[in-house]
Length: 414
Image 1 (tube, one colour):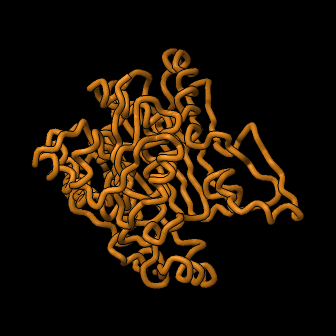
Image 2 (cartoon, helix red, strand yellow):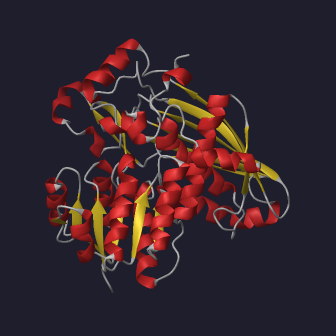
């Protein structure tokens, strides 16, 4: 079997999580790593896990000639510059089979369009990583219901949610660097998986046409003095001056272009889930059937009493964003697999090695950015955004949310 050499751009949490997933993927090795701060610990993990050489390079341009695929797992604010550097290396003679970008594709529509133009001008195949569409629970549920959907029609309503207690890194809390708050961070997941779960069997992921979106964004927990001070002390981000939303909810309406039927997807996301850990949920309703998924349901639970709690230092070995080191803990024995990270890498590797389209590409990723921007616009205007109006396209092409501009106080504290 051929081996695909990954060159990973980024040395933080997401890169480390993908390494956990790559232990289960055949035909891939991590040949190179590059990050703003030298990712020596990540490289050591690559070698310890037998995932490849994991050589650390000083720049993307230096790394590209030694890898087959560039996997962009770096912070959102650096995406455009990283793609420019990758494409410059290719135009200078380096050969790549393609490029991967972790969600979100970009902070706004203009950045996303720029990235897409760059890779297509360089002739690079592109894969977009949106793990929730690859989750086994989502895929298995839709497979099981396919005969029912074909007889009774596809779902008419989906409801998706993602909640945890907040990001790991300071830049992720900064709305300018990240691109917003929880809507940008996790709302993009829910927009994608809700849309996907409504799609009739056998149709492309963007078959349903977005019609409208209505969203509400709020600062509920992290704007309170106690938590604002903690955020400033821990991450150096002042939500008294440049706040981002920690709660978002809304509804997207889609139209089936063949039947004209309207269907809806509801989403709710938050950074204030001070409970077991990361919770992803998805349910759907059709004519005579329903489905329901929740990642906090696990075949394994452990209990750690007070006397033993001092020995439990790393709670995230149980579940991402775990908030406790004692008591009853939900444990996912294989979290990267449960959350779809394994299968999205399998899909990418098979796509690049066999020269065929992946499940998701950057054009799709740009559509999710557009929907995310429309949600911010809806919240700012306090009105439903008509996604079929050509004027909306013109606005979204240049739109940067006030929260992303660092002016969130005008929206969230007014």
